[in-house]
Image (cartoon, rainbow, N blue to C red; front, side):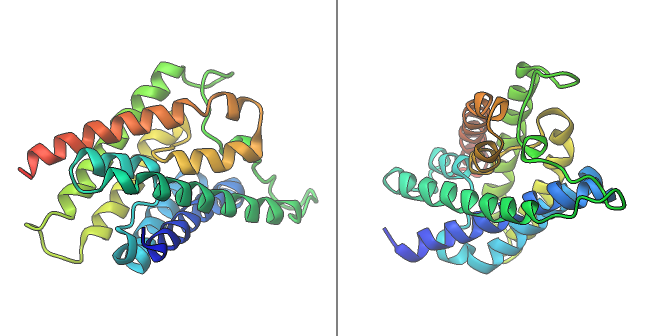
Length: 229
């Protein structure tokens, strides 16, 4: 296993989770709302794909790794090291932003910052969607995400533009799913915030591993057929 590839996956996932944590904790309650989080996630994927995607393939997401295996684009033997690097990168970002949150101002003249529980992926609580709704939306959006990833990186499309399509897809899928599940698509992102939040976020975490991985496998298989690979 190429150590540089694992470092790239760590850095890329760190960047993505940093974008989600930073905007969801601070920008969203200050007036940015869901749109700020969605654009931050999409821009982070775009930027990290250009920065280190050529080193590792730019997965930054355990579900993407599984989906690319299903699509015939990645080796099963390399999956576990990639997933470990992704989870560690997400956790590192969450701990950095936990330290930043501890130093946030608390006076009445500033916005009330979000907590890690508020930005975690959950379901079934007061004013929340059901587990079935969260599961379905995560399967569907992750399947669509894999179709975009595999289609935009096909040898039959112009090279160099894939990160733009992937980043825009991430933004769109976040906007679709944030009101339902707080937008996972990515078990590493979900694990990072859940471990800082504890409680219901930990109890619900299994859905945000299983559903994105199921969706990614479906999307990868569909894309493989569509691209005739």
